[in-house]
Length: 316
Image 1 (cartoon, rainbow, N blue to C red):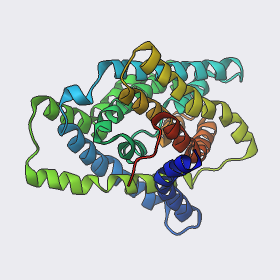
Image 2 (image 1 turned 180 degrees about the horizontal axis):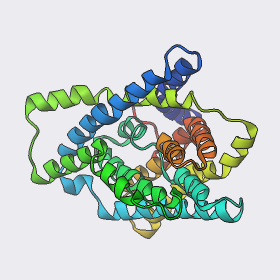
Image 3 (image 1 turned 45 degrees about the horizontal axis):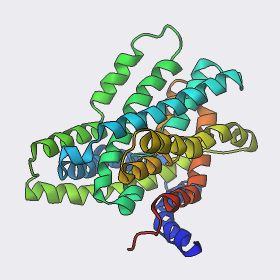
Image 4 (image 1 turned 180 degrees about the vertical axis):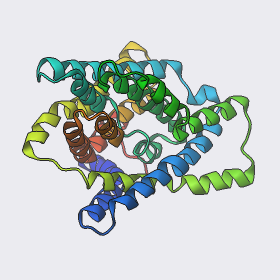
C-alpha cells in the first residue's frame, strides 16, 4: 500500500511544487505580484484555450461529452453550493451575500488550472471531456449564480453583465470550438495543430505558477482557518463523495466517468471564487482562507483520493 501511495504522491506533488514555487517567489519578493498576474493572463487567455481546443477537437463529440456526466456533476456542484450557503446563513448567521460567497468557494474548484496537469496523466487525453464539462459547470453556472446572489438586493444588470462576460470567456469559447470540430470530424491542419500544441504545452506550468503567486498574496490566521474549515471540508470531502454517489450508484456511469468526476470534484477551491467575493465586497477574507487552506490540504488529499479510485499509480 505504501509504495502505491508514494507513487501517486510522486505523480502529483511535482505539480503542486510549481504552485509552491510561485508562492515562494511572491512571498520572498523575487517577483512583483503584477508579474504573476501577467503570467495568469497568458495562461487563461492563450495557453489554456489552445490546449483545450486541440484536445477537444481531436475526439469525437460522443466520446468527450456525456450528458449524464454533466447532469450528475452539476447536481453535486449545486447541492454543495446551496447546502454550504444555507449553513453559513443559518448556523454562522451570515448575510445572503456572504453565504453565497462561501457556497461558491465550496463548489468552485480549480478545474481549469489544476485539472489538465493532474487529471490527464491519470486517465489519459480522454479526460479533456470531463475537464471541459466541469469548467462549464463550475465556471459558467456557479459564477452566474454566485454573482446574482452576492450582488446587493435591487442591483440591476448583474446577470446580463455576467452572461456577457461568459460569452467572451476564452476558455469557454475554446471548449465550444473544439466540441464543434470534434462533432464535425474536422481535423486541425498540421501547422495550426503544432502551433496549438506548442502554445498549449505552456498552460500547465504558467497556470500553476500564477496560482502560486496569487496564493502568496493571501494570508491565513487561526480565526480565518476555523471559519474556512467547513467550506474546505465541503470542497475536498463532501463534493467528491456526492460526485461519486450521483455518477456511480445513481446514474450507473462507467468507471472512467466516475473516476474523472470524483477527481475533478476533489480539486481545491479556485482563485476565481476569491475574485468573485472581492468584486462584490462580501466574504472575501473567508474565501481567501478557503482557497489557501484547500490548496495546501489538496497537495496530499488529491493523491490519496486518486489512489483510492484508480489503484496502482500509472507509470512514467
